[in-house]
Amino acid sequence: MNAKEISPVVKRGKFITFEGIDGAGKSTHIAGVAELVRSHGLSVVSTREPGGTPLGEKLRELLLHEAMHLETEALLMFAARREHLVQVIEPALARGEWVVCDRFSDATYAYQGGGRGLDKRKFAELEQWVHGHLQPDLTFLFDLAPAVAGERIAAQGRELDRFEQEQADFHDRVRQAYLERAASAPERIHVINAGQTLVDIKKQVEETVINYCL
Ligand code: TMP
Image 1 (cartoon, rainbow, N blue to C red):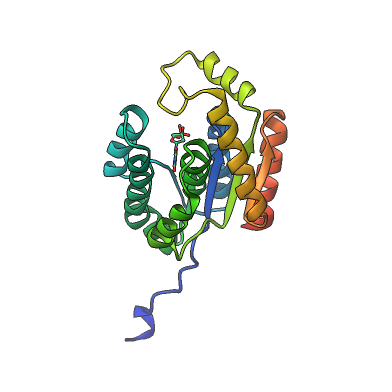
Image 2: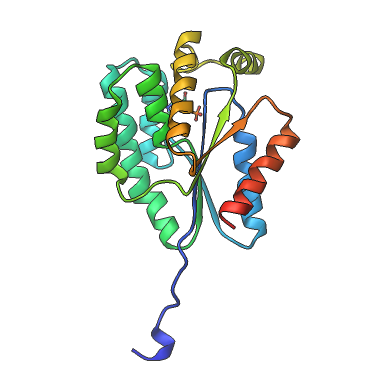
């Protein structure tokens, strides 16, 4: 192989995830982070879970709207995640692109573990199988009282999915499980008080991305 044929070493991209109860307001800030990273001349893949691939989006439709056994729900979340990882996330990171993802495995711990009450030890095994070698570089947890989040969703006046239709105690348990998860991985998971103004949240999120990843 001559010098021309030696490909340059590609610096692996960063993987940033966004979490929080429904209505916590993460979407605006996901777009903001993608914009910030692009402004540094880097490529970004913006994606979501469940979803992010053609198969994953079909599974999302089922997960959000079809009644199913609680364990089926948890397994389908991980099945969609495996497809997402293999088809989208891993290849993008390997190409040097950044991946910003609306939810990842922390959501399964919070919703299926905290909300549905399933045994979190099972998720640790599935997590190991599906993405044992890969964790997000940085995770933002948008924390908000479920009553406030519920008001925000109601103000949107749209049809609610299976998770949004759950009672307040479900969302309380999801929030609690998220906070416990954040306490167990404080270097990775940054808790954002989602009750602040958009401007303050944007500033805090962007400063964190710059400090930790750029
Ligand atoms: P989204 O509306 O924020 O895109 O998320 C879709 C719903 O899926 C949301 O209510 C949370 C739920 N969910 C789980 O219950 N477990 C998971 O592992 C993931 C990724 C999402």
